[in-house]
Length: 177
Image (cartoon, rainbow, N blue to C red; front, side, top):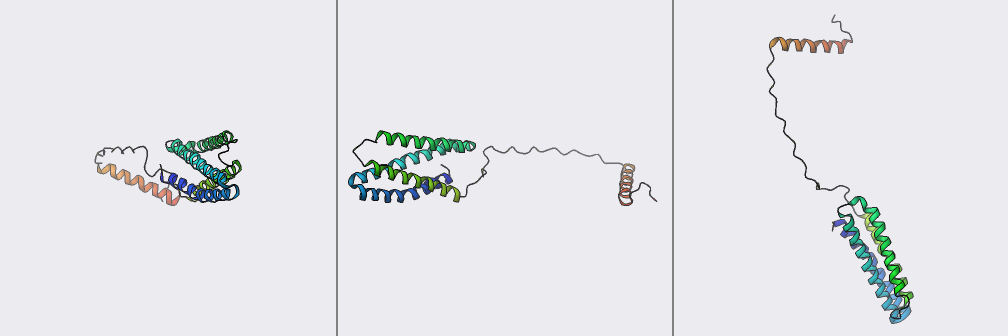
């Protein structure tokens, strides 16, 4: 797990935790013992589904960060689908209050997503890998060529050519007057 992923997960839980506790307490006040159970089940469902979803997203994007957006959309859709299946399966139960469960689940899930958004926007994430994933290739050393010593007439001819170029540049003419 990368440090920024852990920060996002922790930030989501820090925001969703108190919201879930308050929603569960309000459910207990409004619907009694069954409201308390409904609120606790809702908080557990949100914590489980969204924590597993965050873990799955981290695993999917660990080696392939270019698929982060598609993977995020897929994970979020699967989370919502599974929560919907859970609601349908337990819609007729008498173990807990369905309305307390649904409202607690809704506000806790929204708080979790809000915590993810807030933490993602405020965290400083590196856009480049500080350690290269591919080891760098050492530069090949080019053997130095030995340049033969030039004779005096060759050096004089080179100097005359350089003087001619200087004359052309300074006067704009080939005539050296």
